[in-house]
Length: 384
Image (cartoon, rainbow, N blue to C red; front, side, top):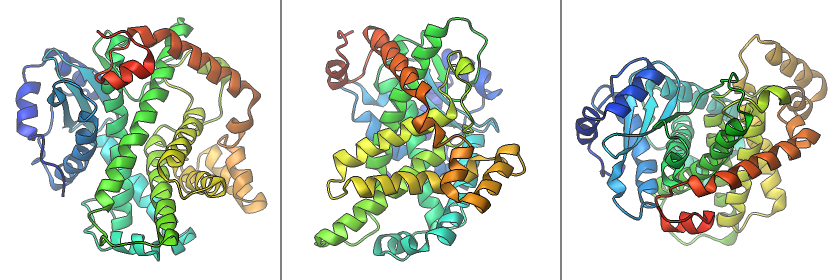
């Protein structure tokens, strides 16, 4: 099913000698254990799916693409990690806790999709997906596909930290995906870290798109399609890609934006990050799905965030109660506005905040060390 370009045992052999990797894994996951793909069927499937993203990211290495390596930690801590190792390897580490969280999200979202937008399941493309075997821990083939999209996005995001040369900034040798610290007074450094997160998100969108199209191409019959069929297929692929990426990001709970606190965090506010991810998805769809117009793009944006939003809320929490109340009384858009997702689009503070993020990224670009000359040229970075 997947490219066989990294034997897990070979990655483990290197990992055993990498002191910086072991230190970062222990700090983030509270264990130094790392899995090969034969630990369990679930871990095996996750590793096979993740290798799609690994192969895509390796194409962006001008030299020694095999230095980008991927492993899974058996830790229950839901997190992902980019590590620049003492072995000169670029490591991506996903935790079992994160994979389980994504499985749960995929099952929830697939169930909502079946109940609220069942027409999609009746299309030729989605019918072909439903013939594929369901992965361990997933309820349906559609849930499996959403899970694949989310895993691809996470792998792509962590790979983005490497491919785009963020080790030029993260001199401590590692960067954990889930971090909500706000104790450091150096606001400028926190904004820089947020800027690099947005950049890695954009790279993750590209990896998810390429991986999904590659996977889908193996599950439908190749033939000549009419323009209408191609447009329909593009809509569905763009929609599922958007849902999968948003689902991955929804592990970070959206919440109302506390602007004062936001400037002192290492990761952007969940609500704003989701909105920015939607913007990145829209740009990617415009560039790569030429049969979709502005009306289709807006529908995909709203329906994708609509489908994912409620699964980000803890059942019984104040925001979940508020969401359900507004949904019953005023409809879904009012409910999304109440929990902050649509408010962020029109928040007058958002434009200023995004501009400061852009300024922070511009200032840090001379430090970056992209793995590809094309990124060096795009960023205006002097070759290292």
